[in-house]
Image (tube, rainbow, N blue to C red; front, side, top):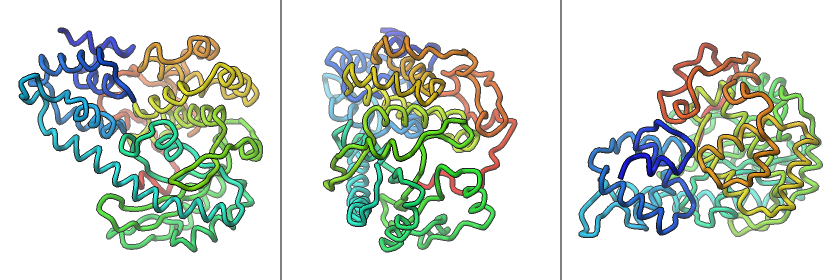
Length: 393
């Protein structure tokens, strides 16, 4: 069996075998035939793989818990005679089980926040991680959660701040010993208030746990960046919000079409913004897997409404960018009519970054190399001027 057989699962070529294996396992479900392909690949190539690189990449791309569950539950790391095909099975077992315990702890904490929002009658919608982990993956161990993203009306921030303060949250960054929250300096506060009006600085609470360092609340007031030129009334999104249950608590989340738009816009922004590139969080497989799985749950009517709403907001570039790359990683998984609807109007869009930073540039590396090659930040000729928080979870 050649590496190409596993590589054929994605639309990327020239990948290291470890990257091919990562993409093959970065799926919510595997068929019996797919399991057999992976198993045979490991039987033939497992001894020669760089497992340190594989572990690094699965962690960086946010898919370690999911990949770990496949490797252990489907017994892909052992041959028919019980011999090991991949080292350190215990790491993968701990990654999945540890993530499940971590998400349970996070859920217990964030359910208090949601109850606080409900009790105060604040209009809100939960975004991203928590909604996907429970509503799409249906297994708390498969997807790592971080902060609680909450969409609010701007005028609701004082009430939200009061509620967060009652629960022990403060705006700032974690101290060196992780015992307290240190307020942001005045420059950071002013920069975010003036230039990043679609959100506010995050609220932190030391968790003082081995599996969770800090709990983070991340309120925002718009789904589009101020410099995008797109205007959309946050009230429209909140009016369309639908009921759900998050961490066992009644809650509100974005309506499915709005979820998809939010996910595409966020994927595009993070992939092309200097701050995220510097953090190494610009391109991750998990973002595109999230999009594919969310789209899988929608019917034809939803996809028609999506096309109309994208045109209404004028966010075709972000949707085209996200769908194009998701289809590269997961060929055949996205509706062909949707892909035809959102072909990038300018191919340069796929290689351009820094637009929202006011310093547009073009990558001289292809998507596959950016995804799995040397860190992108080493290639930057400009740096982000946004002060304040970087990865806090």
